[in-house]
Amino acid sequence: MRGSAFRRWVPRIFHTQAFRIVLVYVFIYAVSATVLVGFTYWNAERSLDAQTDQTIEAEVTGLNEQYQRFGFGGLIDVINSRVAQHGSGVYLFVGPNGSALAGNLTEWPAGVVPEPAGGFAEFDYRRNVQGQDVMRRARGQAFLLIGGFQLLVARDVSERFLTRRLFTTTLPWSVGLMLLFGLVGGAVMSRDVLRRLDAINRTSALIVAGDFSRRVPLTQAHDEFDSLAENLNFMLERIERLMKGMREVVDSVAHDLRTPLNRLRNRLEEMQRRFGPDSAYLDDIDAAIAETDRLIGTFNALLLIAEADSGMTRGAMTHIDLSAVVADVAELYGPLAEEKGVALEVAPSGVLTVEGNRSLVSQALANLIDNAIKYTPSGGHILVSAAQTPSGADLTVADSGPGIPQEDRVRVLDRFVRLETSRNSPGTGLGLSLVAAVARLHDARLTLADNTPGLKATISFPRAPAKKRD
Image (cartoon, rainbow, N blue to C red; front, side):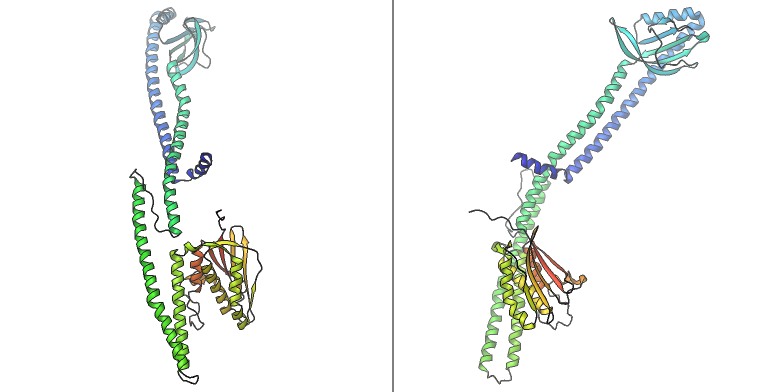
């Protein structure tokens, strides 16, 4: 379990904003620290080189004075005396034939070229330390004297050379360790952030599913996430109160308006029975009954849309067979299509199971078929199908009517929107709004496309979760 959880967390951690922030900070810190330490070391090394060069120049000045006063013999005596002091000085005085005349070096260092004016250079040399020859590092000047004699005056800088090599070796490792620790720290921080965000996302998903009693959990840290959670919980409480108030309003409207409308319709039918068949009032009563039915239908459609958008019907979600729903609704609308002279065909399909509210799905399909029959001319064709897809199942109604222009396919899903400006044909402009609301309730996607000619309306349902064993 821990291994699978780790494999699930790691890819997500690398894509979190917290990890990116930590990574950028660590990178900037590592570069800044490297530049700062490098500049400090470079400045210190330059100061030490300057001090060493000043010391060498002072020694060269002293040796030059001895040479001017006592000649080559005096110069050899002074060099030997300084070598005998066992200091950090490095000397070598050679004759025209290359033989060593004085100093603590046995041979001329490779790569050191004497110049008339003398130039500073660093070189490696061998030196006897406690009976053993060891490789050392020195910095000094080499001179070409009159008669082909050569003089090398230098100071031992092995300690500084080892420090430089240690610095250049350890600095990349230090930067690498800083980046590694930064990655680990960023992963730990991101994991904590992800854990807190997952709690918010899980709560949000449950609320979207219709459970408005859920709240974001709080911790004892009292940090920014807890402040965010408190604000979200306060907002959710307000939303829950508003939704509760909306349900109460819907219930009140259902009780206070739908019942009087039904009573009005019943009284109109009673009046229709009282008058004789030749009464002049029958046409007016029939028109009133039709208007009343239209009001009741509009009212019922608005209630269904409100219930679907609020998620109040999610509790009635079960596994339903789309093919059975198609067969039932098509059978109901078959006589209406036949009466108008429209061929209503149902494509054969096997069992297609989705999770949904059967009543609402049936109502949405009925609205699509009713619209197709209404706008398909006589002699036209309507095909109703349910098909399996890789991501779930598609419920499609395709007709051969005039269709809907591309620019109106989003607007037509709003409430009371009708493309007919004259509004001569029957309808309330709520049919596709209800279909869109049912699709949102089921986490499905409603698509309006061309059927060349006509309109093809498709509700794409997600794959139904597996049934739980009892």
